[in-house]
Length: 317
Image (cartoon, rainbow, N blue to C red; front, side):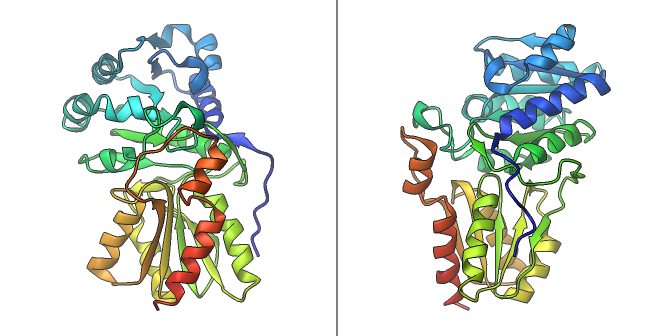
């Protein structure tokens, strides 16, 4: 069914690092700041090649956001990097006041999002970050699905004027999108056309949704799988077009079902096209320590959960 195949597992944070390396060579205005997590953010090559364009702020994330906002005044394009928990929750006031309210051209780039950072446990995992960031007026929120798309998104946001939250992860996952893809902010990508159900997935759940769709096809269920890499601005046109055809929808994300992609889709449908919807997401809880696979299984964030949600929502049509 699907034209996509796993080209080999890679971590999305390395896709970010590859994007930063390219930006370092092509855009002299790009600068990078990091809160003592260089290795985790995979920005070693950028720093080696552009030492004068890197600022190590230490474990001082609030200061990092303030510095980033200031750098934009001089025409720089700052990429502020840390773990998702520290890049959003710890510094929400600074982001709100110094970046979003002020409309500063800061790119907040966050690794280790969701539960798949694994054994570091609940205090380092964050399942609320998409909600926190999408509620800020003027903030663009992007959650790419694999290495190639994360690299493309990293390069694309440098050319976008305005604040951006770019979210990616720690584990090695299927790399299946084209190497030379064009990344267009706010434009969903149709991965598989279908007629019975629409699956709207983001981040690590995109590949899981493709696997589920193949299994469901064997059961005679035709799934339309759409990659919602940009959660804000949401591609409402693509969503409504698909749901008008299929009559039901499943949203899939590595995030709390409160405040994430699913809620954005539900709002769109409630206002324009009331439709049965099921959520594949964490049901309002914190994470815990465990391997990524164990946690994705426990919290219902894998292809099996997507398949079950599809079977459930079809009965509600």
